[in-house]
Image (tube, rainbow, N blue to C red; front, side, top):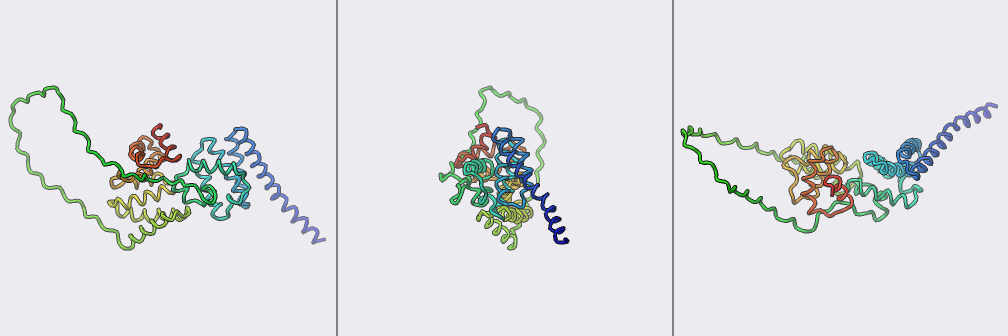
Length: 314
């Protein structure tokens, strides 16, 4: 009798879990139906709740997150799309939940196209291969043109006005100017220590390997620490700014890339990163100048064209 009672209790305890599973599956189905009929806001709400109930099922969670991202994209929720992308990266890195899900090929293709358009190219390049379009992946990184950047011409002298200039009347000569002391020399820049140089080398290596998001965050922390200690070092500021851009920390990216004079015209990728970071952190007008300087020497991709349209209206 005791064994029978125990069996019944265990069966009853399992019922709410099964009901919850069915509930979340129904939510995902309702979200898909809402998406199909064009009700993207309702689809995103249903799918967001459905994903919450699938944390213990990586394959279902990967499918649910993919569909949620598409619904957010259709609903013009770019920030939501990027957050969902970050969750997809974690699910794929830990459990291969996206690559092993039962998503139809058409849905995968649609999602990967939108990721190529909305996710920063270096961030996407650092994501698992399955999120970049299958075994071969898609080449999405912003690349500098192979052409040598054009020489920078000095501005033309301002033409003199044809109007006669008024003749100044003689006046009492002004007192002789007092000699000014020479300006104080700028403080000597302190070279990074050997330990700091090792930090920078490690940060460059992590960025160059296009590792996962955790490695990119580590690269940013390493570069930021040295950049804050050496604000006069342009190279160090740019390394910290690029690392911040790669993890979509827009304000930090704009701050570091704008320090020490900012990128030159011979650094079109960094100029583009600065423009995107300014735009995404709310300084759309300030983003126009570095973007215009970058475009002549950048390979045009859907990602680049998307920001050119948003920032410059092109």
